Length: 205
Ligand code: HEC
Ligand code: HEC
Image (cartoon, rainbow, N blue to C red; front, side, top):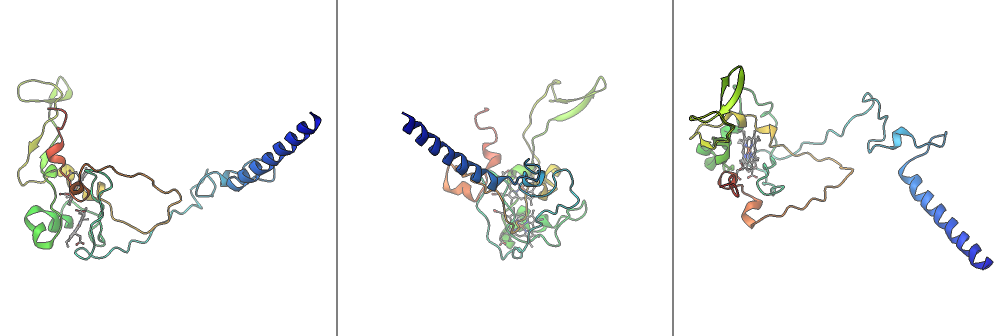
């Protein structure tokens, strides 16, 4: 019995040492024996100050528009990532939106760019009006919150004017935590094409 207890104690202390070694790799202990603030975050700098912390700015070295290759959609109907450089295109201004010069449906085919989709030529917001000092959403007949789906013809909805709010250029960066998300597409086509305007009311009607 005594023998067994001693053996158990030896095994236990072995594990204790092993665990401790594993732990000290993750969090460095300061002189006072406590885990240091700097070792907690992924960035390994003072968590209370941004002064000495510089993010990885990345290298934006994508080829010019027309020379890049489209990237598979992150998930079904996700806004496609911008595969080409946007140097000289950003920032988008009220009177200067170069994205439109190639992506508007009337020019996109000629420059082999994906057309801005139907969803960007739709208004999903209800009309609003003021009732008793309050701004309310309404439909012509009554005052109630409604979601509309109205085609604007060939007029881009200005809510979509700022393309880079949703579509982002790509940079080479090192990521500390890998993204393990794997998208589940309903069909092969939706990996490279969106159909949001067609399916927006799926399951609602
Ligand atoms: C000079 C024409 C041109 C301009 C300007 C331009 N693009 Fe493009 N874009 C293209 C072409 C062509 C492609 C297809 C890939 C290629 O050939 O480089 C493309 C691809 C894309 C894609 C990927 C589409 C898909 O189906 O995966 C997105 C998103 C995109 N561009 C957004 C933008 C945004 C946002 C801007 C403005 C900041 C912009 N583009 C400016 C021509 C252009
Ligand atoms: C509010 C977010 C948002 C803004 C702003 C926006 N988009 Fe999109 N875009 C999306 C989403 C989400 C999709 C995918 C679903 C869909 O088709 O609506 C998409 C899809 C696209 C596609 C792929 C179409 C296809 O057939 O696969 C292109 C090209 C595109 N957008 C271009 C643009 C351009 C150019 C602008 C600026 C004029 C812009 N978008 C502004 C969110 C946005």
